[in-house]
Image 1 (cartoon, rainbow, N blue to C red):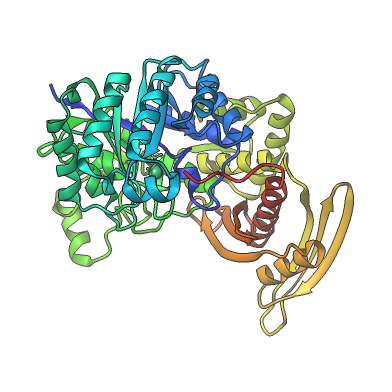
Image 2 (tube, rainbow, N blue to C red; image 1 turned 90 degrees about the vertical axis):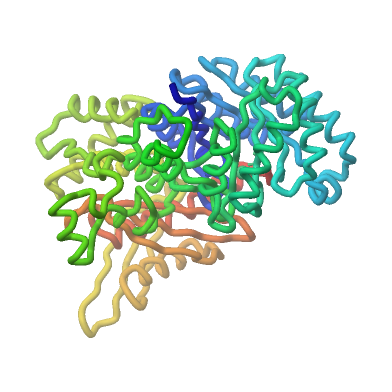
Length: 511
Ligand code: KIV
Ligand code: ZN
């Protein structure tokens, strides 16, 4: 029998560290449920000591998820570990992941600690985490640039202290696949008690090598990979879950291990994460990009029609393409609506929210004949976002006509007051944003504007992402509607609402 390759998903933690990718608690639960459905072994739900919001979100995920282990990140500090232990206390299966940097540059310049002090703190942290759970992971941050003798020394000590998983991070995405594989092999060979722990890897994608480095480590004995849906994560992101899972599955002739992932949930998970974070998936992205299974060249099309395996190494349906189920239609009632949401793992907080979402559904069904699962996710996102709205879109008129200057008139509610403005612009979206700015004067910089269709066809809802920057704080707002100018206004206001709400929450600390 082959070894089990543990899939540790960190979309909710490292993924959320992508600038602008912050998620609400409700969104995190929806993603966690999808990960559980996909049979991810471990879900890193967040960094409980980072903020009250993070603590609550990790706790909510731990309280909800039953089949996957839920993990909380903690610096090698007693206070952080206590917060993680507290957040995870109701989990069916809990893991604490504690870390401290071990590379010379991090120890000297960031921590201002000697290697001996780092080692002592790491050992204390692992022992403390063991007071909460016997499932403890330790990471020597920036292992890819750490001294091998020191790494062996500290890892041997943390295993003795009770660490059950040793995670080797290539924090800055610096290593090469062969070198990283060798690093894992050397550690396994040189650490006397290495057989008492599972080796894991956590690779960043700064040089586009995160997946290659992770797989090279697997060939050298690593049996856990830390990864994220769509490769989301700090800077250039983490190793992408879908690429890891499908590489291991497709090349069983090469890999000595297999995952337990149900790959048919991959594409829905990718769409869910992209919709919630507002990070579109590039069309040529492996596995989950819109073109991943599209054959353009005549020779290829001809080959695939004659015999699929000429140009296809995987089947689109095996990773969930085509699984976007026709969900509901205009005549579906409240019960059918509620049941489909439940099947999608969406539990709305109250009957009131369910009713409000059902009204939105009916409005959409009047305009759009077929409602797909993706539409329902977008509706729920819009409704739950509207609960935290400081600025609310009341009405919008946008006009564009050949040869005429486009203009927009908008009415927004702010704290019970109705505010109106109109503006022209180079297009209806530009005019709409200018009109909003006349009211709000947000002093923000627009960094990104993108439109995607949620499903296919010209009656599809458009999903717009707007990224705004203000004093170094970056937020993504998203909005969906059949009318893309309205979707754009919703997205712009959603970003402004996030900026408004973030004044109350402290920013994520650097990990
Ligand atoms: O990239 C990194 O080193 C991390 C650690 C916390 C594992 O995210
Ligand atoms: Zn990381």
